[in-house]
Image 1 (cartoon, rainbow, N blue to C red):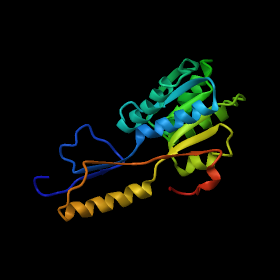
Image 2 (image 1 turned 45 degrees about the horizontal axis):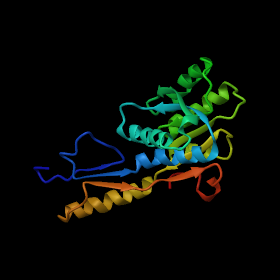
Image 3 (image 1 turned 90 degrees about the vertical axis):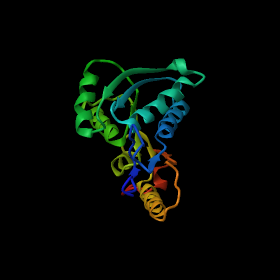
Length: 209
């Protein structure tokens, strides 16, 4: 910054914004809220497995939004977190970890994943284990992989979608403002929305929104 270099961080979070001119994010906390609200509407009770990434701030915000919403529900006592797995948000790591968890015999009927990659890994593990009971799987991102499973895989329930296209457009506009010497907000938060197995036909399953 001392040399006049402008720094814009997109779709990521840092512990300190001392050297950053602007951080542009999707509303990660809201993403978790949307998944929880859908769950509360669909099920009167649930045993929930959380798929997390402890060292990622955005992942923590998503899970926090989900758990806070569950705790604040009038019938919160009907919803139980029965397990937590640190998946690092990767499908190839999630799959064997969920398979291992399934073998413990701990019953769960809902999975809240920090992102779609973890959700896809969980769905693959459930399929491989040939679990016949329905397990509602939630993800975050609105990725092509998850969208293709919605409406096809009965366990794929919803993804709280962000828009990388709008993130990119906002980043470019912000960068030009900074170059022109204009003031910008230190943090810009973009809205998210829920894509479910009920409304997937309204969205393009190929690529990002």
